[in-house]
Length: 102
Image (cartoon, rainbow, N blue to C red; front, side):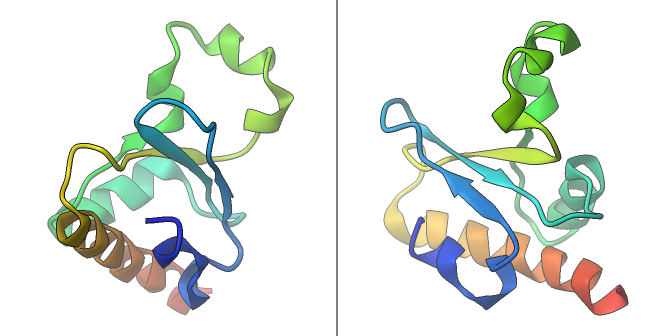
């Protein structure tokens, strides 16, 4: 999944691997909200968790300045390799729609 996220459409995104757990975090390029990308991704048949939904209260986000901006959380452990790759490709298709508009 990390290799797929190094491709062209993701160049402006920042990938964070905490090194433990089941998730990768991706900071979206400026101007793209996780909620809007989620809606577009679902039309492509893929989903992810917007970062803001991974905290009990919004104040927790303020404790982590590295989490500023729009982040998404991707589960890499729940899917076989081909499923994860296909999911990233579908989210990338939705991301391309946003970048093509700007």
